[in-house]
Image (cartoon, rainbow, N blue to C red; front, side, top):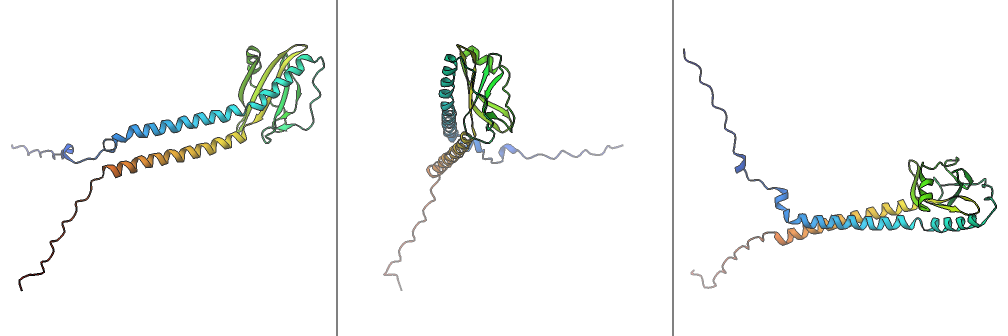
Length: 218
């Protein structure tokens, strides 16, 4: 009994012979330039963003030092807390909170949604160790405040907290991100355009037809 012939497997085309144009291979000479443009854009953004953030602490630093110096030499307790407080989830005004040595609030003109804000654990201890601490306070989602805490010790001991909302800084950071992104995209477009203009193959010029002689044979 003869066995049926097994059909030969279909031969696959040799893909190695199919002409392929690799994007990375084609533009490999541009990768360093793109990397440099990306790195420079990132460095510029970080440098300016940090400058914005550090500048946001300036009034708080001065206020905290002045209030702490006053409390060091004073034997009187801070004045009563005002009824109209700064809700720093909405207001850009500077707010102040004074704590005693145990971390209890003895003066505050700050509020968050109508309530007294609560500090994260360990912040006052850190200020006591260093004498002063600066941090971004995030009491709830969407609310950030540039905050300075100064520890003081003299006639009385305690902490002075001065802060201010970072809403304006966040707006500046957003504008900065847009400007840097546009500049980065423009630089990438410039790199690709320049490469195209410098490496394109010129089209062969068409040979001009020979001028017809005026004395053609009739």
